[in-house]
Image 1: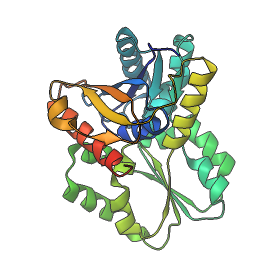
Image 2: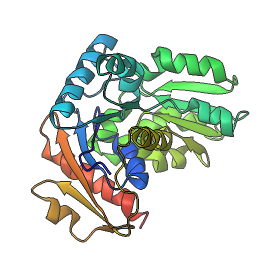
Image 3: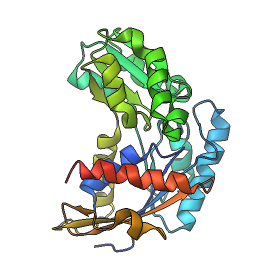
Image 4: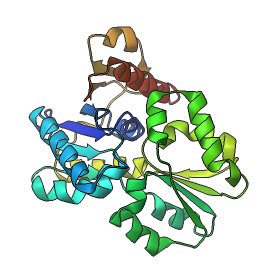
Length: 282
């Protein structure tokens, strides 16, 4: 058992919490550092080289904090910078979120599909190769410029207004929705209210499974046998926020949160959202 494994996870904001939630479900014994880059948010409209530089800087920071595994919990960052980062940091496992479009092909190949993603993801070579390979010619690609920003703000009225304007005319015309940005699962309920009964696909669960396989292969997994679990964060306010929140097993999940703009409200919202997700699983 390796007691020094520390997993660094980064996103352009708090959207990567949807990835972290899936990782913790199957890897409750690891230590995590979550980096929210709200200072440079959004990534989706930035030039590729700028995104690469931003991601490189974040990786260096996470490595300096002792992380020996990096998870890119951002679709745009993954599509643009994963190959570059893996070539630069050859000794560090770097796990990237993958577009979930292939999942639609595997589970609902004949369905009418809406892909909601940032402009950066939709224009990326990685996504386009996938799309051309599995396109059933019943797919609509929608670049949701600004949606991740509104989700970051947490203003539900703005979120509903945005979704009604962008996808309100698609009610009854969609069977599957690919959530191509890690922020978007946070508004899955609102999307359902507008589109009706649709099936959602995103890459978070697949990433979590792949991460566990990589850790096993590299003999980096902590002991998997646990009984009871307490979610714990590295923060002066951790007792106020997380006191008596108990999970299904016995380990303490240590999560350190950082935001590039030093926004304490982001930290509060991050852990509030994380606890809401886990309370549903108790």
